[in-house]
Length: 199
Image 1: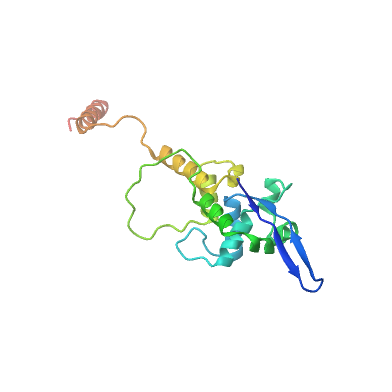
Image 2 (image 1 turned 90 degrees about the vertical axis):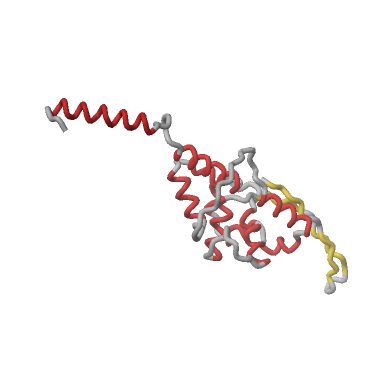
């Protein structure tokens, strides 16, 4: 989880002819499957794509990353944008500084894991579009517990990738051509003996 501090603001109120102070506040954020799912639900397109996102779309993603104080994670996954708006007004994101945005982007891009993978050559053809539902499918296929949807997304991707690698590795030792030929010869002899044939 990333915790950032949004600095206070001092504004001049022309009607009341006095300065108004808005206090600084903290935001707890998580780049997770929950935030991804909420964003895709709102914009009805894949977030994890190469297409450019508008400033408003990125602010909404940051907004969906917010974990409101005192809200249990399970309840957070059920909250709509309107429910979240009751707790933290979207307008508060207008106060994010360039430094806040840099910190958030670095957090989104961070690996969040010590696991490394050997890069394999990219497959030709159109890559699969990754959406929240596809990630949920992977989680269900590998029996990854539902609470992992609150993990940092890059950490969850690493876990899914490990499952894919471990489950696709061949079991047992490699059999040489000579061993395979010997096994086939032995099986043929056993069959001929059992059936009482010569060929």
